[in-house]
Image (cartoon, rainbow, N blue to C red):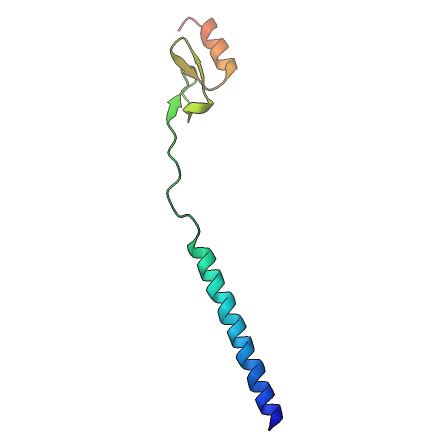
Length: 79
C-alpha cells in the first residue's frame, strides 16, 4: 500500500512541475513584442535608381546617393 501512495505522490509532483513550467512558458511567450517593425524612409539613388534606407544614403547637391562611388560618378557624368 505504501508503494502506491509513494507512486501517487511522485505523479502529483511531476504533474505540478510540468504545469508550472507550462505556465511560465506561456507567460514568457505572451511578453514577446509582436508590434510592427519601425518604418524607415526610403530613398532612390540619383545615379543607379536603387532604393535604400534614407539614413544610409549620402547627400550631395540636393541629391541622395547609395554610395560614395555613385556620388563621385554622378559628378563626372554629363546627365
